Length: 125
Image 1 (cartoon, helix red, strand yellow):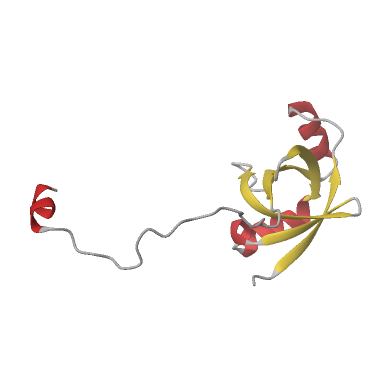
Image 2 (cartoon, helix red, strand yellow):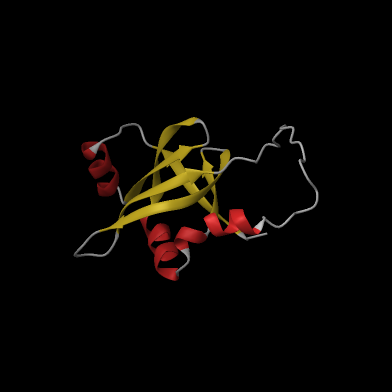
């Protein structure tokens, strides 16, 4: 199984452009955690840590365990935005990962042996 990395996050109070700019002024990167049948959670991450993770490579394919104020959430980054001039992260989107549930579906096997199509029907296709 893939190795997971731990990342500390805090819940942001507001959403939108003004709240995101305020988060950046405090030296943190705004983020959002969505998916898994739950409401999106606005987060803030340490900018220095996120910058190192992004530029180290394989950021979008790494599974993270986000420590959100004592609660651990497994997530994978879906997207990040960088400043065009300064090249530091502006925003990160995380997709929440949930355990897979078993499917309780009944299937009926029609034939266990595959038969070749007759020549007339194969030519018609």
